[in-house]
Image (cartoon, rainbow, N blue to C red; front, top):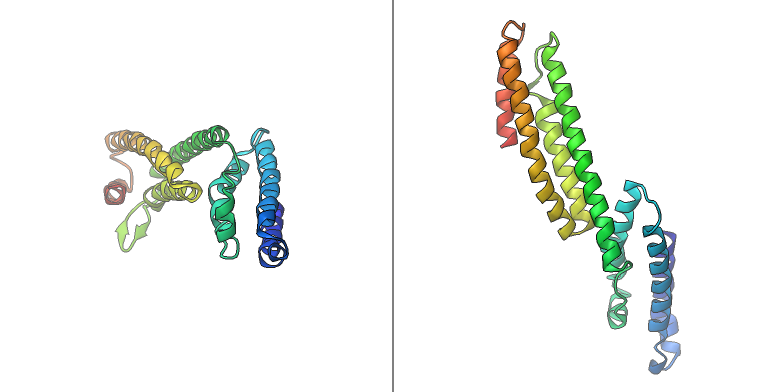
Length: 217
């Protein structure tokens, strides 16, 4: 953040004031921009090659694909000058791809585990002597119907915020995880229907789960 802010502020000063003090052939802005970019790219590469936590990988990818090329280099004061310089990406494409795969693998596992924990909690609630919650007057499982959908949606949104390609790849992966989760949900529900017919709230629990189907569709 400090490097990005410094680069943006300093290059703005160069574009507005310093550039016009030199003859065009000196390419003053280009020299400043390339030096700043090379330093920034060196630091980004150094970070990318170190051991990063998942949240750091996400932040670095956000800089490479989003903050740096869009928020900073498309600034109205700098865009025209920077377009002439052709600075390129903060990371080599091979290293960026490696980080993307690490992020996608981690996010896929995180969502999968989250869905599994959610189903375990829901199964546990079926066993309790409690009537399901009502939403808009209808029995429904807020935990299952809403949490699962939000988990998948928010994960897709975070990936799309990095880049469209990363978002599409994660969506493709999660479209495999959701049917697997739904099969586990169906099997657990069928087991409950078969073995828990004497449950105090058997019928409301059935209704709540049937009502969840519309949300999942």
